[in-house]
Length: 464
Image 1 (cartoon, rainbow, N blue to C red):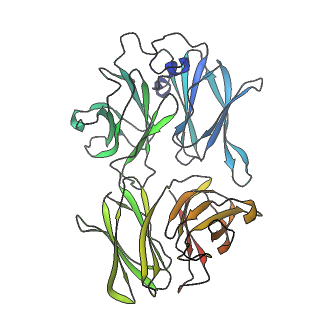
Image 2: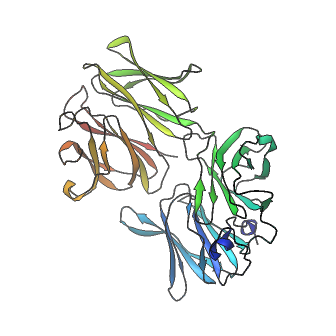
Image 3: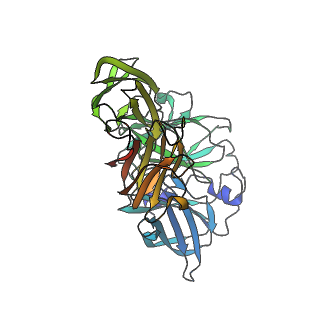
């Protein structure tokens, strides 16, 4: 058995199949069991089918990135596994992997982890005897680690208030490998844990989960992955459990900030972002309308945004924004210099390269709509041939300088912005050809110079 096959799936699986996470039963399973995990960094939602020679099929569908199926019993036999995704151009299922031989043995828990990339997917099968803890193990938990990141990580698990020098080192885990199972004794259901990672040979944290609990007599597998957040210098992690996965924000990850100039009646805008406590300058740029910067990593804290216009040197507008760790923020400067109505607002977005989708953030910078004293709009992303009357908004009721975040399939859409709750068009339609693994920033804005006609601006960026 190779090193990956030796990795015990740490999820209390025998207990789960028998119906209780803390069961004392050691009865053998009549069949085998399986759990399917999607750990492909740029994967869309996947459907996984296990098929027998008689065409009997067991399906595990709707599994997104860093998600897993519950542990399920499966008749002992030889199966062919197929992994499918929705092809956005055809709007139909297509094979990512097919005819992967999976042998399900009795009394064995099989964890099928889909890893690697969408272009080069990998299948890792982890096996574990289904027997649960022996009598006398009432105050123990079992923990293992699988490292899918590109570098060695030192993994520590200990009480929430414990300094890292005193925490239990579970192992220095090289890329693509795993630790043996570790039994941690004298634990209690009320105990709080903290998972922390450092680079091998370093004391600098690259992941900190914050506090969480693990039930006694439970098994957990810690899966380490590359960061997909705003801080490229850290790692990410999630835990396999009996029913799926659990993920915690990385408390040592930096935030990410980008600046958007949505002031239509000014040629250029000078924008400076600083950390008040240290006076560190995070960003100092001059932006034309409607340009945007790239995301830059920033320590999570309060930041000050100062805005100055070329037509009014020495006169500034200021605002303060609180940044959370491991979160992308878009700071939008909007309004009118002529009307002396300048506003600054931040909104969050989720970015991840997905091979068949684009990450989408929409920001409404329109001060007026078709209804007096009403500033909310709807954004429609219409498949070719669809009409407004036949569709629901992609994002609805987005207020002035408000943002909304989601994704679009990698195909062709017509974008339309309407007054919210109506089909009265404010901007568009414009046609866009969406590419996978990209980020789309879509702005509803006034015309250059201010006022009508309104327009839709699309800023596309390729994601690594």
